[in-house]
Length: 332
Image (cartoon, rainbow, N blue to C red; front, side):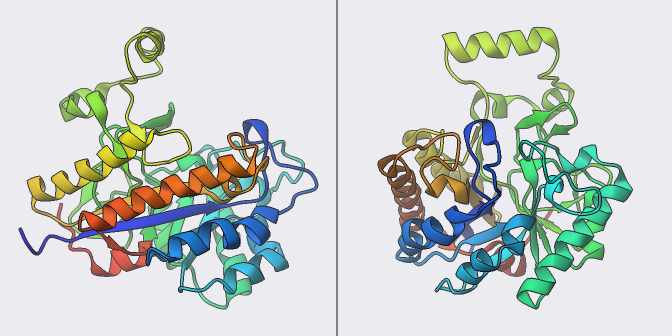
């Protein structure tokens, strides 16, 4: 039991300034990256000894000032990529109201071409290949795995176990620990592989107690089930799994998530990784749907730091996504 490793990872989906309903501000700008990420977030998380993984969207990579600020950050953070296809060739939609399209909605050919272009942009800007990736809006599918492998990636962190985002994007049966994902079904672990799936942290709640075969057949988009979920969420309590994301998950549940993953490691006697996520635009007032004042943004960062500090006290070790992939012992 003593040699079980518990990794704690902080990831930042690094994007341009957004607004209500995640609409992109016009003209496209990255002031949250240039001004707020270094002073409000990075300096605070670095004091805890944590090097974050910044997953960069194409418009951030293209922005010379934003890219220079990121490259100058102390503490050796990791930089990976984050695909929002609206702002990536081929067939970009520069005038899109927001980044709402999931990449699994593209044809396989278009998805592959956009991933290749995003990776090329990263190489041109940073002079090296990215190792870690996350799909925008978690919109990955099994076919994406060989695409990432062909481009030289080592890590995907798009899966959110137990949760669902769209009829075609469901992770209700995905493991809550790192695994080698199948190209046929990203929820299914393989014995080995070139890509390590390092899922985002999720507190399963009541839903996680259902047998896997029930979760496999569960359809949250059936009209009856959708009505039940809406009613129970309002009238009783939130039975949905909760993302390890301080923007809307209460502090108590964030701390419970740390405990749940710690107990998972002991119960399964295996290495685990707990991944906390956020968006860079949440560090800037008015550049996101949730926080409109300096005080709100600061409370958000303070909550993240409080949870991270708690995890480190509970024996978790700070790491980047690439660090986890290099060090963790994976078994099916």
